[in-house]
Image (cartoon, rainbow over all chains, first blue to last red; front, side, top):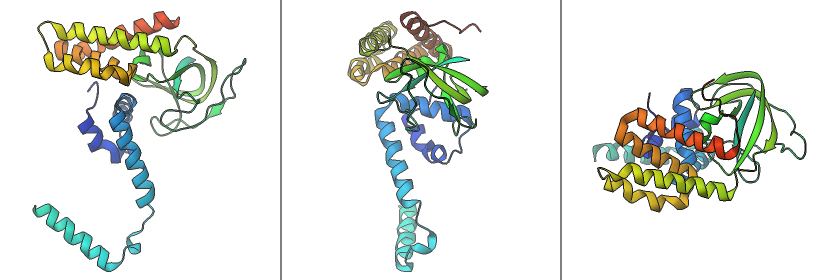
Amino acid sequence: MAEHVTCQEVVELVTDYLEHALPADEAALFEQHINFCDGCEWYLEQMRTTVAAVGRIEEEDVPPETREKLLAAFRDWKRA
Amino acid sequence: MIAYKFLRRDGSSVFTGFRWPLPEGAPGAWVDAPVDPCRSGIHACRPAGLPYWLGRSLYEAELAGDIVEERTKLVASRARLLRPVSAWNDSLRDEYTRMCADRAHALAASPPLGQWDAVIEPSVPEGPALLGFVAARIAEERHGAEGYRDERARQTAWLVERLGLQDDTAS
């Protein structure tokens, strides 16, 4: 088992952490990293704030034209 | 079971923000939470876990109810704070940070690990938790995972001695 996680791994794991989807041992390594890394602590707080704000929006709350623009943007982004 | 818990300076939990009932001449009130490691429950540690969770204020805590032991922490359904560990103050925090920085330099010295040595002094203002990690990480570069764990054990021994705690790492 790993002794620690990197900043890159924190970025990859943050959603699972916030959704309580990480196994206990991985969550512990995640929190150990947050405990010493100010940059990742700040990133986690930003993600928490974003989820709290955006997580309240239901799919039907998004106007059709906005939905189309977002889908188009994601399609182009994937091609880029 | 006696364990240890780091809190922010204002007595709140580092990860949940929960405001703990602090001991004031007598133990603080009991707090209850169902155990589900890293989701719910009261998190604390044995002395061997201290280097991984260093924070601003340290308390001795009594754990009760369901207790789950993990690699570096304990999760309990019931706990109360018994007393502040007043030896963990700004002066000792600085001393520990310097000890870890010096260890890190020594570990990076021969043969030289220049890129690692260069990060040590700029990390000092970030405090003891980061410097403990840096020293252990350099030990890992030298000796693999065992080196990392050995350095953490060395840090535990330093803390146990300076804080006047009972070393339970063998239990």
